[in-house]
Picture 1 (tube, helix red, strand yellow):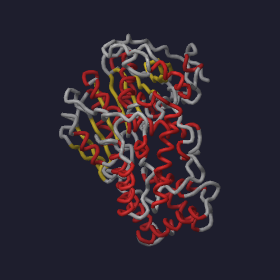
Picture 2 (cartoon, one colour):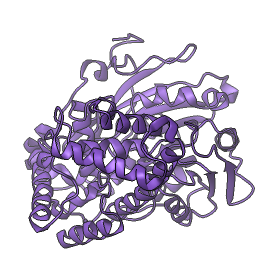
Picture 3 (cartoon, helix red, strand yellow):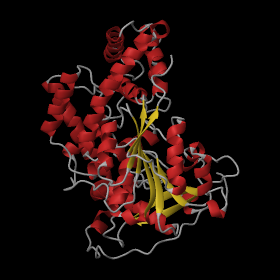
Picture 4 (cartoon, one colour):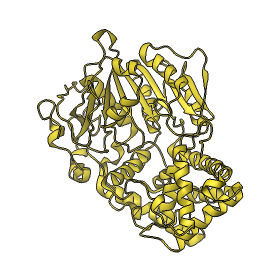
Length: 505
């Protein structure tokens, strides 16, 4: 433990599981105070951070605190949650300071406590000097009253069932696993399930702002963080100073988004096949895209027929899903496919961190719980119809990211979708890669239409997820820094920056 000041509640209490939430169910059934009843802002007492939060490079420092918030904003006297918060103060002069910049790394389910340090290290110097960078674990994630879904319908079985069901019996087993997943989440979180929505997290963001004594906040949200930022603008448009939404989730329901992503992944995988074929001398998977695809399918059939150390088709598809989102992972994927073909095993296909570790389990649980709290889910018949449609597009789709299918059987299904955007918000800056398969560009264009006066920066000829202070593109980084520093927006609604193109082998 790094000591900075006095030890805070966060330093002493590094875990707080919501497995105790069934004990709170009775409190949720009591009479509700008026929705208009305001809760006074609490001050944050910063001190030591958990060892999991890295120390920033000098002269910056990091400090942590916890903020207690109501589980249900309409019941401020009811059960409460702890939200873990980190802060790296601005390193510039008082005259340079622009306020606070909250950051979120994505998900839903991504921990943001360390992100204040790791993302800040990549930000332009002017931004680091101007802003206190504020990270936080969203409710239900990491050190913020983490949720659990137990076995999650066998999601962590190793090897897992083939995620692409074929035939009536396999389809029914697939639906059964989704039902069991929903039941497992309800068994742990019980009546608290509806209160882990993006809207509630946006309200937690505003509580952090108030606790820091700031009239307005600035925000940098990546991937799911863009959805969270758009939800904040819908609730608190007058409290937004500057907002950057990077790698943008579109303004559609989660299930529709997941399907859009799964189709984009097919396009990206075809691009990967053609790229690997263009470098056949290195990867030896085939000299054209069709031959590389055949090599790919042979590997998948191989791990399906003979799972190696718990590595089967579900684990293979997770590895492919992860690799397709960032072009720097393409060469390792191609090398791993070749190594398996040559009898080298699956070690190169395994992710660096174990999928079944505690952080992964919390991530996967929070991901489903948040998505299913954000709006109505599909009907089971829709899930099957869409699975069949994807298999019509491609006989071997990658379905790893279709997480909202579990909402078909969700307990406490919400009646309405999370609201996104507001005409009363100041102009927002959106950023997206032209060929991002994880958050396709069409979503950024659609969200921009819900945010009057917003600007969209597109990184052309780029195929990766995460752009600002991530891809090393000077055009993007300059434009975003100018906006964060003094509110200067690109002169046109659509700014195009030249991207790197496909990676060298």
